Length: 230
Length: 230
DNA sequence: TCAAAAGTGTTCCTGGTACACCCATGC
DNA sequence: GCATGGGTGTACCAGGAACACTTTTGA
Image 1 (cartoon, rainbow over the protein chains, first blue to last red):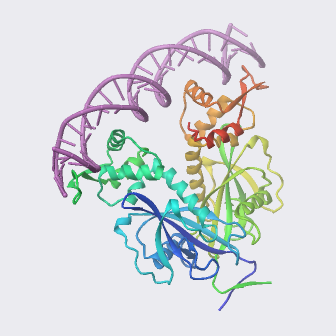
Image 2 (image 1 turned 90 degrees about the vertical axis):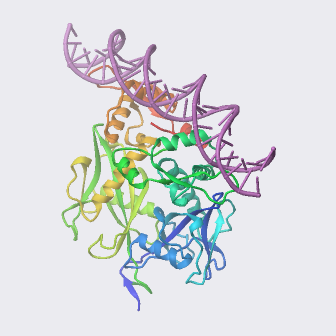
Image 3 (image 1 turned 90 degrees about the horizontal axis):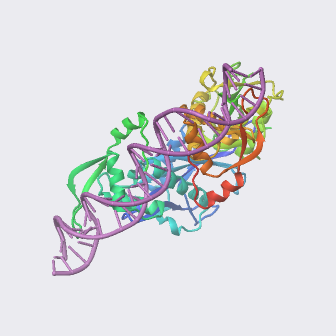
């Protein structure tokens, strides 16, 4: 069965740049290996065609799960790429999303599609299909920008985390070292972290206190004009 | 002639939220009156279908000129809206842009399409077609956000402007009064304004010195990590 | 000479930055 | 007892915020 229109229509896809923090020391993204032409065998961002009855975000979440098994994650629209020749076959416009996951809680499941999925360190990506390198760069810039003035970093950490891990995350993504005392002072002063009565386990040194981000409190403060900024 | 595809495809449109500053005192946006169903007779954002051989931005610029005569303006991608029922006829995904113009330099030309175009104050918009109210709100929020940390405000002013006009612009968009001395100190300290040997003319009081934004210098500083922030 | 906006400095206080040592724990 | 990271306070400095008067010009 075919679907016909009076004017030619571009195809619409979604693509996802999903960031994860590996052992809290390397920023990685999720890629899949294409088993179809074009760019067969090359690595690419997970994504695919938007179905006629689903929203863009639904499409992104569905493709992500189908191709990588990853689900229930923070996902936000990034940018829409519409260069005419970005796909050699056809005019394809892609609406891109970036996502954040706590890598520790995710094992890559066997994918239902035959594509292989894997995490790659952001500073050593393979050659990517289509214009996915550009999409990745856009996502990385967005992540760096947003991290400063929105509390999205917590999405990359487990629910309970020591402050040092949070600091490490900022250092990795922003690419600069931060002073431990100043970092703690600043983040604690915002009063958005819940101090837990728990400590790290199985560490070969003094165990650090664990904290939890207070999402509800943040939402309240945000409505009152509060601005997270680090 | 028809165009057929194996799977159904959404239609792709672009829509533009173009802001202008009227007499330097009211923030307005550009609307057109629809002369076609649906929402016939209602006001809507200028926009239309993306052609198969043009980029998204080209489509936005073209529709803008066709429907309103406005061209050669600052335009930046805003967000892509893809709710399933946002158009009652068909599945339509719209890639939206926001634009900034110096209203003083623009007269609305007779439009080639029959639609009527007009500027409306942002705080007194008519009922808008489709989900255009939501798109407008998104654009306004983006404008407010960007104005603080990127020098886009100059796009809303003539090339040569007195500092008081720049301040007024910030006050209008951000919705709060600013201290004159502090504002001047801050903006002049950045050293991004060229002090001209010209003054206002035809004003019924002391004429203010005119300034000009130094785009080249800003680009240089930006590369070196400088951040515009007001 | 009056009205209307232009233009200009100082003080105070907050918040950022720089910086070094002791503590708890596991091995 | 040693190695590893956890945890803490202070002094200095820069930049933001508050604030009022004189100047210029046209009507």
